[in-house]
Length: 422
Image (cartoon, rainbow, N blue to C red; front, side):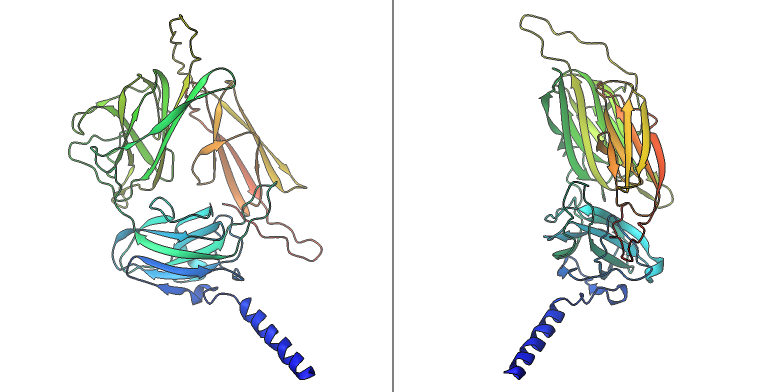
């Protein structure tokens, strides 16, 4: 009986140890070799995976449960690397280089939610024939102060595939920007419309003008119909150095540029829209003479309007004078030492303004004051904030705050949780 019990305990120990073993590709030097033929789709897991003691780069809010893959490009092509059907929000980063301590980041994405693969998700880049790329998959430790700690380990599918050409590459096949009018608490009304896409491997057509004063070379097309007349804003400040063109016309070689009220940035256009008019919108990338390509990336374009209240029955609608004065943004920072949180407050000199924030090299996104940031990667960081007033005017000079995040100290002989930011 005792012998049987010992054998049973030993078997349980062996099975438990095997179940908790780290994945075979836990270390950079043991990366799982993929492909090279596309598409590649392989199952993976980062359960019990660890971060290497030194030299391993962090990406996004990496939790430290990283696994590695290796893929050598068979030809020059635009590819997307993605984690599909994941049990957890992941950090996905692609590198070039042959040594762990000298990797060069090609592209990455932090705090990525669980999702199915799509052409607009993942890390997209132009692969060079014969180059070996290292792919890191980790769990994302990002969480809000009031939320539960996230799940950072589980299973997923890693996919590598060639990105198809954008469907709206040609002027004759634009993507519609759709939106709706919303009633505001103050009695006014607002309009917001948006569309997604990308300009990877897009081309420039014969007779097509230069957009935003740049020769570009990778343009895609959108169209938008104004719901009412009044000041409007178009914006696309996304993952690359973009340029916008706004036109009226029926063919790419016979377009009439729409006059702008102000041009606060190459990726924003402010103008006075006319109800029922359909506008043709080009999104291109700035031409880079060093690489010989225009900038390319994911696109998130929006159209916004601040509309007057509905007029009372029998009253003729009155058009208010156009507001063309940009607002001014003020930004204040404070570090809450006991909570380890950076607190930022910002305001505009014009009531009713909204705000866009950008941390380091991330894209500008809508944000609200106060903004709290924690679990940041140790080192210097920069937060930029600009206000957009009710008329759609943007502050031309974003407020900037520089600050330094320190590595959490060890307390009571134990390691503090490692949670890092972008």
